[in-house]
Amino acid sequence: MNCRSEVLEVTVEARQVEEAILSLLHTILLHRSTGKFHYKKEGTYSIGTVGTVDIDCDFIDFTFVRVSSEELDRVIRKAVSEFKDALSNSGSDGMGQISLEFYQKKKSRWPFSDECIPWEVWSIKVNVVNLANEQERQICREKVGEKLGEKVINVVEVINRHEYLPKMPTQSEVDNVFDTSLKDVQPYLYKITYQITDSLGTSVSTTMRRLIKDTLAL
Image (tube, rainbow, N blue to C red):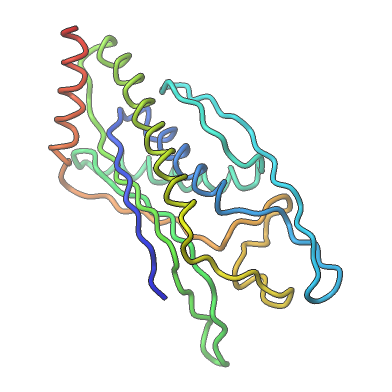
C-alpha cells in the first residue's frame, strides 16, 4: 500500500501557533471521522451522526469547523500544546513540524505485536516570526486568516479525491481501522508526532514580513 503524504506550511506569530495548527488538524479529522458504529448482527450496522461546532480564533481572523466531540478536542489540544511548548522552549529560531498520521492495524501471529500500516500523513510545517509592533500584528492576524482559509480549501480538495481509504471493517475488525475509544465519534486510527528543527525557514518568514510591509505601504 502506498502512503499518501501532504505538506502544509504556515508562518505565524508565537501566540497564533496553537490556533493555526488546531484549525488544520480539526479540519482533517472532521473529514476522517464517522459516527459510532452500532452493530445489530455481524455484517449489519448503523452509523451515528457526527455533530459539528464553529470555533472562532482569538488571535487570527478565522473561524473553523470541528467535530463537536469534547473528548477528541482535548486529545488534539494536548498534543498541540506539547508541540507549542517544545517549540518555544527549544531555543531554535522558531521552526518545527507536527504530523497527523492515519494508519490501520494488521494482526500478527503471537508473539509478534500488530503491524501499524500508515495510509495517509499530513505534515504541518510551522515558522514563527517576531513582529515589531501592534500594527504589524494586526496585519498578520488578517493575513494568517486568509492563508488558513486557502489551506482549508486545499485540505478539502485533497480529501475529496477518490483515493485509498481502508474498507469498512466487520465488527470483529473495527479496532483495526477506527479509534473506538471515544464515546461520541469514531476517527480513523491516527497518531500525532512532532519535531523541532534548528533553523528558520527564511524564505517563508521573509515572504510574510514582505507581505506585512507591502500592506503597511498601501
